[in-house]
Image (cartoon, rainbow, N blue to C red; front, side, top):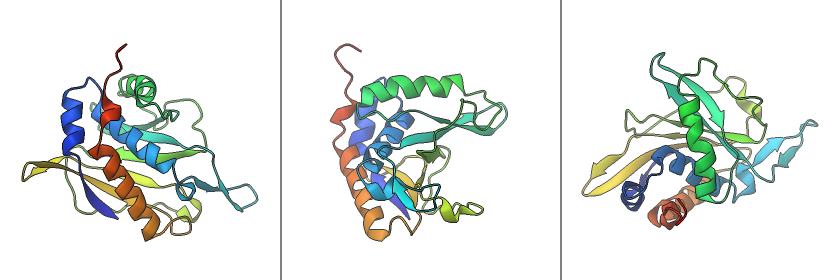
Length: 192
């Protein structure tokens, strides 16, 4: 499903902050994903469904010279400031990466986030070859648009129907909307 999130308060809070927008978006997604077992599902070696205690976001980094992407991951931390301090340097460190996975081994308990900051969209489809066993959600973020004084962020949510359905996806979107509508978590700590 593809939705537009009202991120007006989120954008205003980011403008008062030194924090990176993309990292804040990734953290907000990871926070909501980690609230719900259906988004932390996987298949065990036996083929039985299982649930990770925590999942970590893997997110794309653009290499402007090569016009290619790399995928990095950061351990999820419920404290946004702590997460930002670990994740933000990854964008700089791997912005010239030539390997798709430039870090050492990516853990199995990750889910994917990518960003298309060059375009807003109203629909997005991603196909995964032989993806029948890929139960982790996949998120694609677009470019903010301003409409009637509000900032809107396109978000495409792809979930495996064996793990979640429309009810679960809608709850995730609604909780994400609430999180970005009250972005007090973006405030810089007094020690920053």
